[in-house]
Image (cartoon, rainbow, N blue to C red; front, side, top):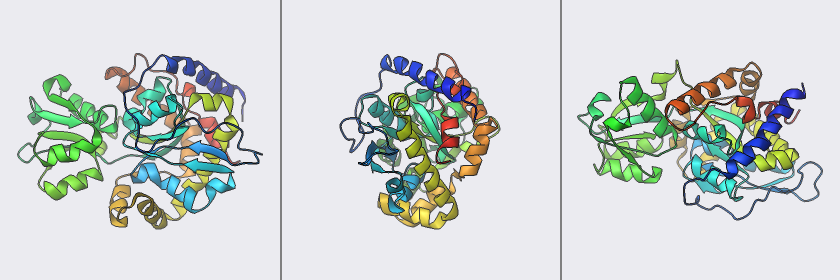
Length: 346
């Protein structure tokens, strides 16, 4: 492996840390987050297990590898003591990383603008999402019908992203609707009770809404934009940890890669382990997983090395610039640790 590119990426991470100090996240904290950064020290060769706080969202994408790593003893193989507090969205996890309450976290595509802003680094691409929808109350049949109507969405998430894309595809912006930023957990009640006309949200939560509004209408989905936009999910890591303790980052990545391979080899068992971790019915987790493109280690490695993932990230960066989330679209090499992922565990 060439040393020039990883060094450039690490220098980019150090520079990005200075930027992160000037950026403020939204208020609040994730459910169950713990105090203090806990990934100090070096995992490789450490006598005591290295403590790592790893946030996640309670769905298949966010939880499956963590469930597998815990059940299969993979964390132990790499001398890691991993705590997994649950959060409702990616931006809250990135805020928690910034305050030292988390070391790693999980984000959906709607939050990718935050690592692109330099707040954290993308450590690993996990899946490609297909669960996002723009849904509407019965009687609304098109995106154009949303003009002047109330549309709830979780700001800074993939729901925000698909809403923006759907509006743009119809020559509209959020100025043409009554945009209602709302906490993700509140959208189920707001839509089911008729408080809003539409919502930009995702499965499996939409399945819960359908139990109360079975004739809701799906106006847009990820697959509608497949020719121009991928919706990857990822694990992110604090910039300070990458700069100060790369051995711990490499150990966590190696463990995640082993869990990813196990998920590929044992798909049904992976669903059951995830369901057990989340306290959900396996059928519901299976339905959630069916909406995703579950990536393999070989795919992520190949697409990292041949530049496909950089292309995804660049296209997403262009979108976030046009959406006003980013001032400029930067080089993925400054925030995606692709070389570290490819080498981890080798």
